[in-house]
Image (tube, rainbow, N blue to C red; front, side, top):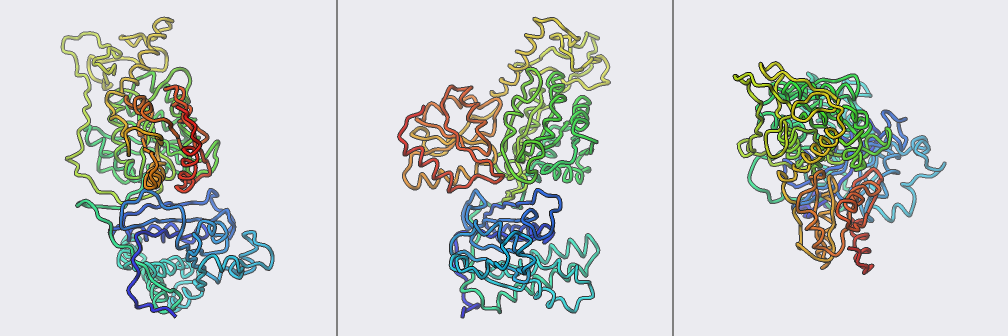
Length: 627
């Protein structure tokens, strides 16, 4: 028998995953655990995993929704490879997630759901129950809790129906895990009161969920099913105000901040698409900051509306995911030709076509760099963490307005939906974005819209309607300086080279790539975008074993940082891990004639640290000099 009143054992870190049917409230339970961890002061990283089906049949493996959180008393960079505690609300959740639980890990199951019907529906053989399988019992610590029945019993006095009561199962399960990891209940209680009592005017629903949460917590305390509770204390942090932030939330705040710093209004036009839709949802709530949002009838209309906003002098932004970026391709070429500032957020997902819309991938790099007709270069950026989305959204606006060209911001589903603690910056510490529009010429000189006025080759951004600055824009080739339509072959050749040169000159205004670890040596791991956390953790583990491994992570992909070629030359070998089939590695080979070795996985999930360590070590041990 356990002593449930004993002091919890201290852990440096833990990984917990909630999983169940879509509609079981797993995202809410996991999100509340993350919020509580943030308030408690832990460092954490989350990995929400949604089903790709809009509404798969209940109880099937296609409809499993999961939320994983890795929390610690020190800095961490990933949501973790192996799960220490799994909460499975049904057999489908158990079946699809059990292989990720470490040997000896705790698995809490709602045993009421492990009926013959439930087991058969998710594909288990007839008369088989994994909870009775000796191999499963010996490998994991299975905790059978009749969560459904206990939730109903604890809420039996409620006047609300069975459906409303059953929806509280997630809070009951969350209460158990809160007790197991010594988490306070108050943050979630306050959330439930704000959400249901104050905002939705449904105090009876708030009361129901709070009672279920407390019932689960006190069940943990009294059931004596666990050998020990755990505690993960707060992580050391720089003083400041912190909040939990996801990548999409950070993009929203970054765009609003950038518009404020530029002294401009922001117009965001988009067509709903997973996993980018949260951006328009977030921006639509910020009208008081000069934000206009427009849901267009399709992707083409959305990008054209954003271009129109840019033409009129707003910060024009549109957002999408891979298939939508393909549809925006022709209009992006128009923006390149018109040389207007435009920002396109591409929250990458597993493709091609509609692919796996809720799963992550990094396979739009080629499309972002080359996926348009003709020679139509854009600046391409990629944030590396959820909170970095704030910084890179500001960077996207800064570069688009400074160089008068489209900028593609390559986020991905993993960092867009994932969350981490974020130290809210002081607005005064963020530099202003210098935007200048030409003024009316009192001398009535002819205005030349393509008369480039500074060393970065950017053309003037004239506001329509300004007296004396009347001009024409469009998709046909422009005569240099005047902007008149031109079919002159020599002019076209010169304009193509000029627009390409303009984008390349942006390299002068982006920071050099930094090397983490030794500045030269045997192996450089070169990454980009949302793989940063996995790569950083893998490099740390290899370096702890004495390996000569360093990391360079790219946030600026076109143009590359000006020192990247020199960095590559300082290492004997370079490996490029990506969640695709080798796109950056091919670009590196083409641009730098450097035989970069790809490490690729495209399983709709972040790169696993253990896999990276094994593959990098295997390449190092091969002894072959590839540079």
